[in-house]
Length: 440
Image (tube, rainbow, N blue to C red; front, top):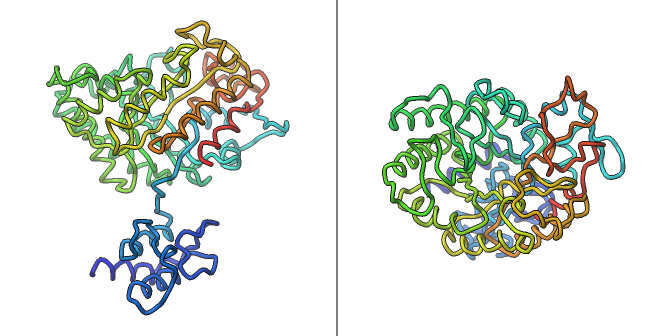
C-alpha cells in the first residue's frame, strides 16, 4: 500500500506530461494522458468510478491493480518501454565528423539533407548506435584511418544530438583503444599487465565514469553494449573464451568477471537501461552454445542478445536469409527469455565487399541500389516472423565522402562498400527507406 500511495502522490504532485498520439493510458478518454488519468485509474481500483476494463489494464496483464498505476506513471514520465517495441536504425559513429567537414547528403527527391539525425527521425527510424574506445589516440595509425577516433567527448556530443532528436541512444563499449571484434580484443594501453581482479575493477570504474560523464553531457544511453562482438570473450588473453563450452574454466571465470563488472556499472548508473551482450558468428549454432552453456553457467548479466550478420561473410548465395533464420530459430529455443537484436548488418550497393566468402553471392542480390534494397526488405520480412527479434541496425550507414576533399578532409581512408549513401554523389540509398518497415 505504501508503494501504491507513493506512486499516486508522485503523479499528483509533479507529473502532468501529455502522451504522444498513442491512446495507451488514456483512462478518462479525453485524448490526453496525464495526471487526470492517474486519478481516474485510482478511482477505478478503489471501486468509486467505472471505466472500461480493457482501457484500465494499462500493462495488459489481464488485471487492473496497482501495477497499472505504475505503468501509467511511467508513460507520463516518458520512461515506459513497450515490451513489444521494435527498434530500427544504424551505427552512425562517423556522422558528427562527416557533418562537421561538410559532406553532402541528398534524399530521394534530390533535396539536400543538412541534419541527418532529423532525416532519420523523419523517415521513421527510432534508435542510433555509437561506439566508444578507451583511448583512440593510442590506436595504430592504420586503424585511425578506418574510423577509430570516438573518444568520450566525441560520443557525448553525438549522443546528446541523438537524444535531442527523440531517438534512442545505444552505446557500444569496445573496451579497447581500437577495434574489438571476433579476431581481436586488445587490452587498452592503460590496462596492460593488470591481474584479472584489477582488470575487472578497472572495467567497472571506467564504465561507471564514462556513463556518468555521458549523463552529465545530456547523452544518457538507453541501451548499452558491454563489449563488441565478444564471441570469443574480451580483454585477451586473460578474458578469452571458446563459445562452445567451459573447458577452459579459468578464462570463462575471467571473462564473466569482466563482463559483469561492466554490467554492474550500467545497473548502478542507468537502472532503466537494457544491457546488450553482442556476439558475432551469426552463421552457425555457436551463439546458442555460447549463451546456452557458458553464459548460463557463469551468470552473465544481460537483457538482450545482439548478433552481427553480414551475408558476405556469413552466408552463401543460396542461404543469404536462411543462414540467419536458422540461428534465430535455435536461439528462440536456447534462450527464450532474451530478445534478439541484429546490431550490425550490411550489404553492398556497388562493389564486392572485401573478404567476401562466396563470389556468387551477387547472383542472389545484385550489387546495385535495388539489390541492396531487396536484400533489406527480404531480411526484414524474415525477422518480423519472430516475435523475439526486437532490433535491426545497419553498420556505418552514414559513410559519405561526397563533397569532401579526399586529400585534406576525408574521414576514412577507404570506402565501406555497404554504406547507405552513395559516396560518389551523396545520394541516400533506397535501403535506408526500407529499414523503418521493421518497426511498422
